[in-house]
Image (cartoon, rainbow, N blue to C red; front, side):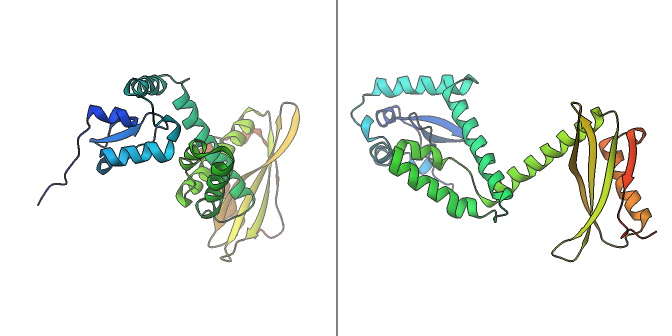
Length: 248
């Protein structure tokens, strides 16, 4: 079986604004201006020059020392957590979370991020701010799996904050409710009321399906398992409110 031919980096590629980095054990070209990483098969002068001409036309007349200086800045930025590379990556991630939050809040399908939101952002940014700014938007990940992952992360973080507030509260109470989802499965919902900074707050705590029966024993076991898993103190629980739908 023949091996895939891997292209090697040449120092002359600095003339087109490209340095070299190792990705998954393979040498790949990286632009020192926008940090974009190309595939190994793009390690050809005409392809690198095309990137420089289409993405950074204003730097077409720059010499090799200019790009070498940009490479040094890039390396410092990667090593320094306060560098521009780190800040840009952090901003892109933050933007991804912000947009995922809006998608979840407005109950839109997760695919809308990649099929509508990002293309609109790219087009508007390119028109208003130009190609360099649009390139930063291009690095923004809004795929369906990314949006779902961001929403899961935010959900877990909110849950963690609520549980920490309950643990720090001198006392708390819970309210049990129910709702039937689109699959006609009964969902047990638990709301917690607690004291935080001398103010009484109520937050959503738990939602779990009651797939078989809805007896008090089933509900108690589900709540007890949650308390045990999250290490909530039963001694601080001062009240439980439930609806008549629970079977005893």
